[in-house]
Length: 131
Image (tube, rainbow, N blue to C red; front, side, top):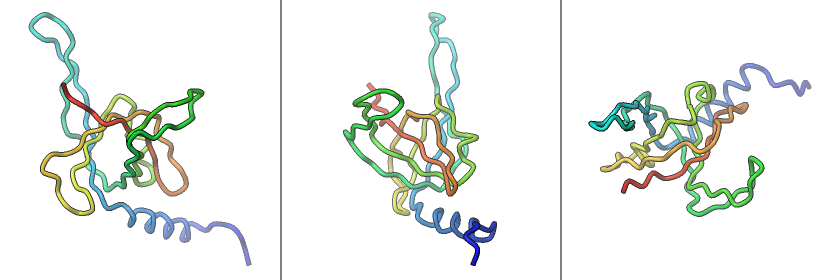
């Protein structure tokens, strides 16, 4: 019996991983414009929509990237290959949760570089709080 991971087995594992994603998120893409005083202003628009999974961890401290006590609000799981389109200066809006459309999408800033693993992509998020 071989212990090699075959392409068919990997494909099945990715399908099972994707089936655990019960949310839908939308990439939010930033465009910089100038206001009437010539100051830069960011506006946000919807980009590509993904099936995703979100693990909310309000106030969770993690120890990574050489820093101690970095707080993230959630971890986002995306399908394999998504790391190539998720950029650190973009936001993600959660549009559905457990299959139910949210009246007001929950918006997060992407707070880490995406990590594309064998099954999918993960990123750390911080909740956007508008003033």
